[in-house]
Image 1 (spheres, each protein chain N blue to C red):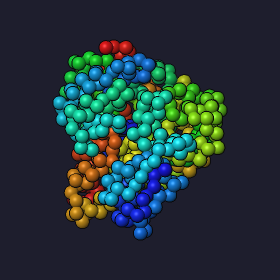
Image 2: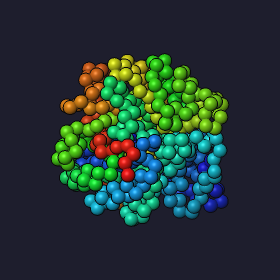
Image 3: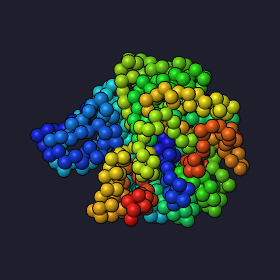
Length: 244
Length: 210
């Protein structure tokens, strides 16, 4: 875990300003609250004037904090740097989300709060009860049983569920698909579970387009508390499989 | 991931904020795609983006020269480029379409603006697929302030803390730093290259009462 070399630290507080989860406090020297720290590496990039921060290699389960928090870390299974996935960036090639389907990305901890993995499991379990289809190439999906949403020891590191629940990260994205008809029901479920978590989560909805609008847009009209932001992320349709 | 999806701000403030993402698809065209990514980046780079790069490669905001960024691209790279001008994005998209390299391109920005960009670039009338941002739920009181989120959400990996934003705003108010220098300092925390320095400077200027 990241630590401060006390003999070097001059207590300037620069690292504390940059820490996105307020894990660093400074009295005479800086101290890191290891429970709060998510190993995102931001302090290491904060240009400490005396180079007083150290980042040793991490082992599981601590390593999970880094994999889910530091964009410079890569899950070898997804081949995507950071905690992310290809999501809809390549949907023009993969057709992961087709017509009649809704793709979801529920990002716990965003914006700027961080999340405990006990909350990640809580939301995943609630969604599993709705019969959602968790996506395979996703870091959270590799930790959960796809039928129940519970953490499973059948994960890339063989970690027991109780140790995964103690992980914290800047964020963690639960990705899944549903038939489009389930959109209102899933949103209601998310609203209900949002009262039970000790963090925030952002909701992203992936939709194919009909001519005039995203196919799923009409399903979102009139749902209390749901507003589609005017900005989004849009696939240009320039990709194709296997070209050279 | 969805790291360029949740940028916050008014429609007016988002009008000049576009992020292009270029990446291969695992199992379809990712293996061996680095030369095509490099070719596409050379095109993008020729239009002088505000920022450009990727997590594992580095970016302009962190001081890496474009040539080095392009040379370091691997098959796994998810390349980003930020622009603050719609007309330029139209030209970039035209050039990428003309190059026809078969690699996926997404643009994050105002939906209506992106549709217009597509039409004018000859790419089509609407996106193939969109990710729609529906806001956030839960313990909202724990999130950074509405003002800070205008800046912090421009780094979708959440590398920019509310504390540093507030600290720099105080410095701006005291004339100890210019909004642009503060924006450049913030952009160094963005590891991927999606941070829009020009927009950040404008927001900091407004929030700092300058």
